[in-house]
Length: 484
Image (cartoon, rainbow, N blue to C red; front, top):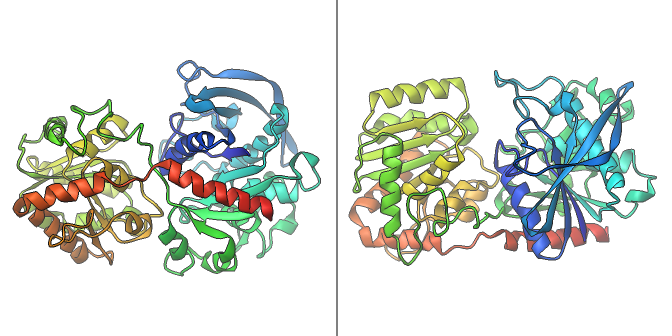
């Protein structure tokens, strides 16, 4: 089976969130199962040509954008396990500091045009490469136009006559909504600006196009597939998603254990595994030193790696922070986001310098150190399509405290101190009170139930969230798409 895998970000080349982890790991798992996979992403400024050994491919890509023709180039490299990665070059669109936003965290005003170009260039690149995909697997609003283009602009093109489309929604909250006049720039006629197509309350909605035109729809956990069909989580697309219910599937993301496993992690102070946890204490003291906190082996250390935005429940943490600080704990935070959150946690760190460590940045090495060194990992998301950090935490014996939503609910089982079963602590409603009601028993068990705590850590470490499991489910869906 030939799979064209198109995404706007892919680890290790470009990343802002979990989509990049998926796009970097799932193709490798598909290749292990016998698929031929071509991954395509834009050639951003941050893609280092020398480091990743990129080679230029002969031939130009020409895409109509409104009334003009825009030229692009094609580069390639190969990842391990025979995954070939192609890069669409168009310097005006992609040679910029950020992937989607400028230095002021504002969306680029030409994002529809940029990713319309990319989506169509991906299809044209297939012809240059002689690659006839059985399946195009597109992700999120940035590539949602691929299924639209295949059904609209390439319908009569024999190159794609056997190609079927799978479209994955990683986060329904980000839909690619633009002014209606952008429809001309992305190469579609006004007949597509219709409530049964890409029109959305007077605007243009690219994600809606992917939902309507793809053969199979997936999202990144079973629970989230159910949630997005409700008004609470549906972001005004729940009605449309209910009409496509029979084609909508939840496939839990996996994690890359070659990258995220304490027994082989090259970024942490000491390696450890489920049968010998002694290295975790070394990782904890290393993390405390990293954040300039008192090195105390006995204190409960809570880690957070998150975007500092409302979706991640960061406001709930802010609401209860003083109450949490009454406990004998330390808290370390890594992430960036809303300005108010940056200022709040900087002030909090100044108020509690012995208890709070804050790093307002993206830092992959520090992320590994937090997963290995923390005792608990806090994810109080208002909604979480899948989430990866709670699965990383389980692998590292770092007990997750999560809201029971989306993939967090699918992957974390409430701990029962009586039976010793479970892998973490969950709360249901996104309120400060319920968050505290999950944190308190976690802290209590940490200090008073040492035997149970070790059992709890090991329960999580024995879970298997490998990509090979998820890849098998995706292949079944690819086969289903080909039958349509």
